Length: 124
Image (cartoon, rainbow, N blue to C red; front, side, top):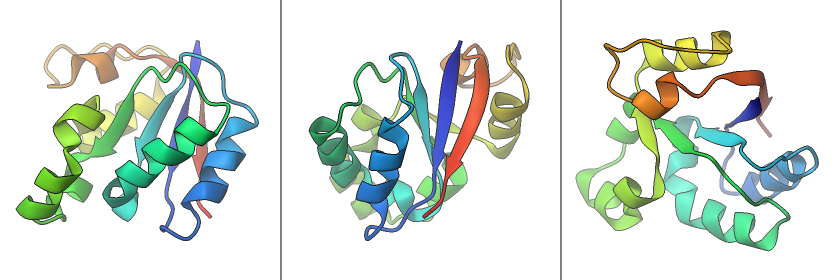
């Protein structure tokens, strides 16, 4: 089983969030970017490269949070290549409350079959 790290950080605290996450990281863990954190995905990639974090299974974001970005910003961030999937609120709840989610009606199958043994929220 794996851990889902939910990160809600500003640009100023993102590096500290990655440092905090690296203390308990295991290969196969996943990341969910909350709020405006998705806008800093390029910085997140750089900080992950600098850290001991390897073997990321998936990086998710909430569809509602991505919708808050302008089309131009989303295109510049190249989110479609950096994110494993966008989650609805329902998918997010299912992902964090169940160790084995299997809802075939949902659009993000990798998220629905992830199964996490714990969820860690890092909000600095």
